[in-house]
Length: 327
Image 1 (cartoon, rainbow, N blue to C red):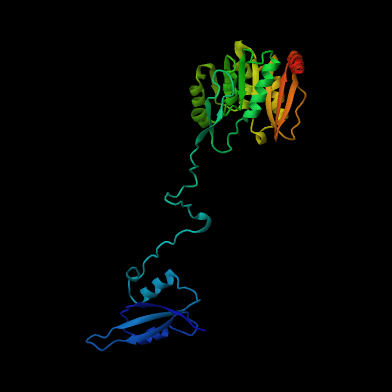
Image 2 (cartoon, rainbow, N blue to C red):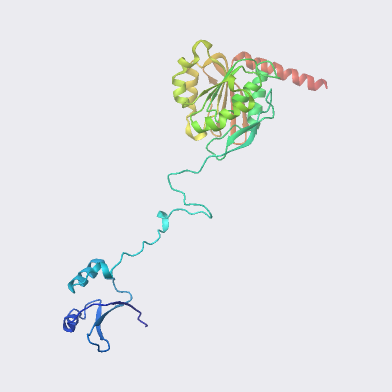
């Protein structure tokens, strides 16, 4: 088996060869050899340190003690090793052509225009929405079905009956903006994320021209419901309430119970609720009854309203059926 050696040569101005030989023993990890040079006026010697590979390294402290024992300054012969690059989990992530991103700085949030207003005065206008899954707007097919049911239940299939809309968990504001576009006089938007409010919701309201008809509440929905009495004031309960929360972050039973007991809802109000699969929704919400319950893949849509709205919806559907039969 081949044995490799790493050599370190230091000019030690030692004059006593016997002293050097006594420093080495058979059990030492270092072997010392004295190599005389060509005779000159003044004889000098070199000390050669040899170490077998696989053996332990001499510590920095022992090196200093050894040099000091020969009257030498360790700082002249020893230097700090260059720091090794970090590897593994502690190493910063490097991208091609970009600087390392620190762990505390999240990636910048961006938007795109994938949504649009489906009907009314702002029809086909594009709306901003955040990229990613942190904000999940209502799907357009669900939104279109919800407003078609509300318009039929209100007795006017072409538009919403006038009133005020409360958009809980508004996010992009697409539901409340759709409501203003279809005939509502005012919409209140409740969104807790300041960035979504400043970079998504407000620009959408400005682009559609509905900023003056909007009231934005940058608070949590739970806090908003607790202050319902102060918010309602002289205007009374809202005519429409949309509830589109993040599925995994709310308890629908608790949430719907808070809404039914608050002054935000009245006897003639309509409530639109988007909820996930395998969620049990009651047939009533306070004094309101469920007038529709539709499924769109893994998304469900429930609409609550007064009993007179259910009868009006049935009469309109019967009229459409009679018209189709005649044709």
